[in-house]
Image 1 (spheres, rainbow, N blue to C red):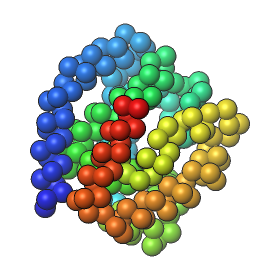
Image 2 (image 1 turned 180 degrees about the horizontal axis):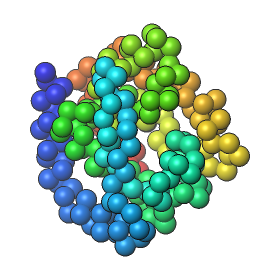
Image 3 (image 1 turned 180 degrees about the vertical axis):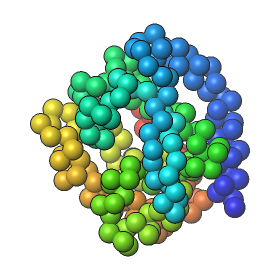
Image 4 (image 1 turned 30 degrees about the horizontal axis):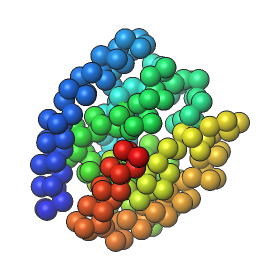
Length: 197
């Protein structure tokens, strides 16, 4: 109850505080390339419930049909504005809408596409999907710029599955087991610090 109240209050305040930045970013995206402002991909939420995530679009329209779900920093599907948006995590800001709606939390395991959830063991799925997915967590802090890790890989999807996903799952399980209000505050503080570094 405390976590949800915290999410509602701070997602609302966050959207209010960054409203000008959101509007400016939306205009720049429209000027940069044709297509919608938002990317609305389907993700798996708490209890396996599907929802559409809000992210600023950083790829060409229909990018999912042109390649896999993993995105390297040098992916040809990325727009010109994408490196800047991703460097400062600006593409993630619209997820405050998902938090306000209750699809997500400020802190929790990052929401995955169905394909990756299906790869989880029953124990992993039961633990990770028992809580709302979040905008940031231990795994996000560990691999803050995932695209850079995948950059120059001849097979980004394989690199993700072999080098990133195992540790990501381990850290998501750690959060699911140990999460608390104070852990959430610690993760939020470390996330903000990383962004401004």
